[in-house]
Image 1 (cartoon, rainbow, N blue to C red):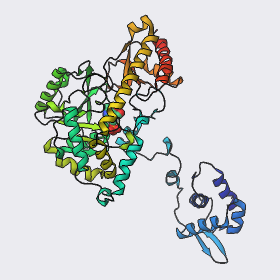
Image 2 (spheres, helix red, strand yellow):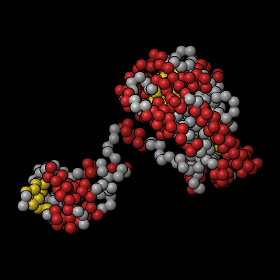
Image 3 (cartoon, rainbow, N blue to C red):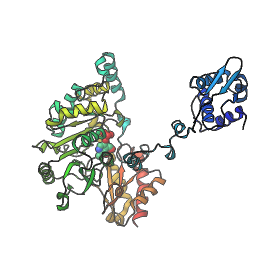
Length: 497
Ligand SMILES: Cc1ncc(COP(=O)(O)O)c(C=O)c1O
């Protein structure tokens, strides 16, 4: 058996043994692990704190504190004058899985999961690439009015309102719900009463609440194909059965086979289909509302980026056409302000409002009322609309610059095979590629040039898939759009020829 000081020293020498923790804690863990692994047996005498401190090159107090902790937990016994001994503990087992809690997470260290948990983590979205050019979906947070926001937040804190430090039970801060109601009525033609607004921590939470409150395990959810991965993850996590529905230029296109199924939920992005950008036609909107009534299903309208329409007025919502209270309308401040604000909202049919508020409180403990108060002021004082106007102008010109850069590089032959999405909205455009092109391979090739585009085919649930690349432009500065746009065009060229 190794002498105790050598043994403990060997543990401490491993850089991945409880990294980043104080020496005293590492020493305690080393001794505990050695005792559990029977490397330090019952009755073994530990070196004196002075000797051990010298051998391990640590302060004596460090050793004393570690020994005291071990004694308090019964691993060692200390008697003044006679030393410290390993206690006689029956049936000690190695600590492997407990120790894993302190070791950096990696796949093998993950605790055994439920079937659902394993499914969720197996399909994790992967890392975000927000600082790389052309990653789809991200906005330009550098144009956020930091100073103004700071002033509004400071004012709320100066008011000293202890009530705003609570969870909040009524579906969110009332003045924020009033400000949102006013905005939605004017800008999005949403039919809204303040009581029917529920503030959430974003669309992801809104979807989760809808899935939990409106559907049971095994129920069917119709989703657009291709589909927003965030919605898909939530529905899968709630054990719903996903039924993909083809999307064409007019949005979700129901066919007879779809109508033979009975959905409980219907998830759509009608103003700007994610990711293709299609706008759902009026005929399709009315058809969908009819179907929802016939099937007794709920439509979940995700209106995630409708503020970004660069020509003409923003499109009216689907909810505004609903005369039967079948639509739950969802919005978010993730794109217009910044994702970390974690504020979104739902407008739910009147019959659901109280249930949603109760569930939000019981399941999620909402809170964040101080942020909600600052946001209420931000909207009601007109800064929100001003900010939207400003970034809309910036993004619109970046979109145009990206399109022009790509077109000028493509040349006549490539332009015939490749289509750049033409709708004037959103934070990304889609470069549609011929079916024979491997868009996933192009995504990888682009990544080698520092470009984080996403392959369109990866958003599909079922074949046939369309090939293309999602190219985000909102946060890419004009000089970078030109530079990386040329590189991207070369990547596309290499894949299409
Ligand atoms: C289609 C769609 N809906 C919603 C969101 C935003 O969700 P959240 O409010 O959870 O940030 C995104 C973000 O990328 C999105 O693409």
